[in-house]
Every structure is written in C-alpha cells, then in structure tokens.
Image 1 (spheres, rainbow, N blue to C red):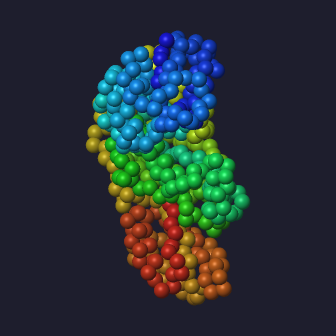
Image 2 (cartoon, helix red, strand yellow):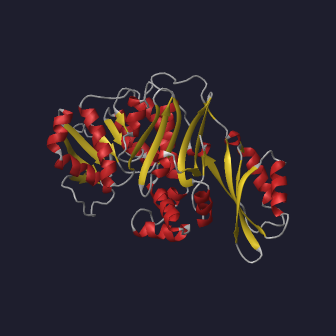
Image 3 (tube, rainbow, N blue to C red):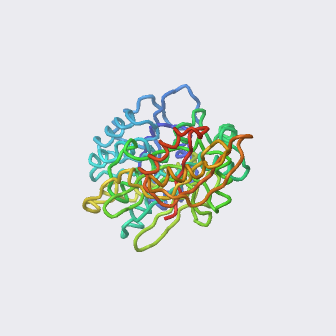
Length: 421
C-alpha cells in the first residue's frame, strides 16, 4: 500500500481523492499496489469538504509523518509551497505537484534537492494532457526544434468567442467570469503569466534552459479588438495566445504573446477552453497534444497518473529528464533578435499622404509593408491594419516608438506578431 498526504484539499485535491476511491480496482491493478489518501492539509478546517479523510491545518503534519509515503502539493503559491516541498524531500518523501508557479521559479533547486527521490509534476502543464511525459520520455531521442502551445483555456475561450461573434474583449471576459472560466481577477491568465510559467517548465525539459518569468517576453490579450479579427479573417489567420519555444542554433527563444497564425495549422483549430501543444522534433517531426488544460478532474487525472508511476517503482532521475547538460552552450535568446512578421493597427487622421509617411518611417528602420486594410473609425479618422515582411523585434519597437509621436496618430498603435514557422 502507498499512503498519500495531500496538502491543499480544494477542487483538485477533492477530485484526486474521488478518483482514487471510485477507480480503486483499476488503479490498484495498474499500479500493483493500493494507493490510499490518509490525510489532507487545509487552511480552514471549518470549511465543508466533500471527502472523507482526516484533515489538519498544519501542512508539516503531512511532510513530517513517517507513515506517509508521498506528499501531493496542491496548495498553490510559491514561497510557502517551496518550503513545504523542501521539507517533504528532506524527509525522503516522494512528491507530486500541480504547482506551475512553484516550478517556474524553483524547478532546478528542487531537482537538486530531490536527487533520486521521485518528484512528478505532470499536472503543472496543460491539465490532463500528458505533455511532460511526452517530452521527458516519448520524445527523448529527439532534439526539440520548437514548441507552440495554447496553454491557457481562459484566453482561448475569450479569443474563440471574439473570433466567432465579432465582439470585443470586455464583454467576453465578463461572460467567461460568469461561466467560471475566468477568475474575478483575471490578470494572471489574460496577461500571459499562467502560460509563461508552463512554457518555462517545458523549456527546461526540452532545452535545459534555466529562465525565470522576468527573463522572457510576456504579453497578454486585453488590447485585441474585433478589428484585429477582421484583418485576420481577411488574410487567412486565426488569433491565439501562444507560448512559444524555438531553437535557433545555440539559442532558444522563449515568449508568450498573442499571434496571428495560419488557419491551416493544427494548433489554430484548438478552440474554446481546450489546450493544444505542438512539439517539433528533429526526427519525429510535428506531434500534437490536445485536451482539457484545466479543471479539477482533468488536473487530478494527471496527479493520479504520477502516483501510479511512483507506486510502480518508476521514477525519472533527475526530475527534468536529463543527467548531463542537453546541449553545450544553449542560452536564452534576446527578445531584440526575434525575427517574424508583424501586424499593426494604427488609428490615424484620414487625410492624403498618411500611408506614405508610415511607409517612409518604417523604411528608415528596414521594415517593409506587405498588406493593408483600411477601416473607418470616425468621420475624420481611420484604422489602418497593416502587416509587415519579416523584421527584427528591436527594429519594430523603435519604429513604433517614433510612430506613436507623429502628429497624425490618434491613439497608441497596437502590434501583434505573425507566427509562420
């Protein structure tokens, strides 16, 4: 028998207990042992829980209990969770976590501390999609050329509704909140931080890159309007919030932001609250992983999968899946050196010669315009919707800084990247 202690018996924790109880026979058959939750830690003992297990409000009763074999950390947060998980590992207990924020900041410290102790975290990225196992095991023979992921269901729901119904961000966000897809404070999701934490975990497995959220490009979806979807539709694009990792020689680009992407790409077809992750290996080519990226049952399914692995005696040592540096000299690429096409929405005074002035300004920064739509804004103003040929991020940023100060500009220009390779 494997005895489990759960720290954080909320939606996911309750679902873990229910899965282990409801599917006990098949789980025991697959694991070779019975897996039983013997205790849970919660912040509020007075709150009713839909589980029948012993509860405590002291997480260290679980980390220090000699009768508990595996600690499941579902409390969330960074600092307190880090202390709790360190204590569990120092007590030689296996750990399973769904905490993406914890791993975004402390995955390498925890790997060093865990050494040969099983430390599993499938549920930290894309809920019920087994992307950690795919990267760490199934694709381990490949150099990973690129990862593109829709890793936040809240953003994907909002962008899908905006695309299909031609509406702007705020009313769709309100609907997402009413449906329970978005938090009362949606900042963590809609500003891209949730997806960034997940990308950093995958990038460590794929490339051995030790980066923090503050080190990478992160942009959200709040400024996207229905006009941007009109341009996207006209030119055969979908708009998605993507977490992107790309290998460029001995460097890796890591970035999270909304993109225009061809409607023909598999990942462009991932709609609603679903997640999808495309991984390109040098020998296997492109593989695609699709499924529910959040929710109590989907996340708990991944947690229980890790518990079964541990019960079988399986472990990945070290936890990130490599015993020596993956590739010598791999470093994080500078955001300035990103080279893609760009989309711009520019509100201007509607008078002759404006487009020529914009083209001249862009030309001074080695940027050429590829396509354009013009949409009326008011009687005397217009929205220019432009796309560029490939250019450097540092050049487009310089051009935008100059453009916003021109006397014919009505409001700050908006930019999105176009992802084509």
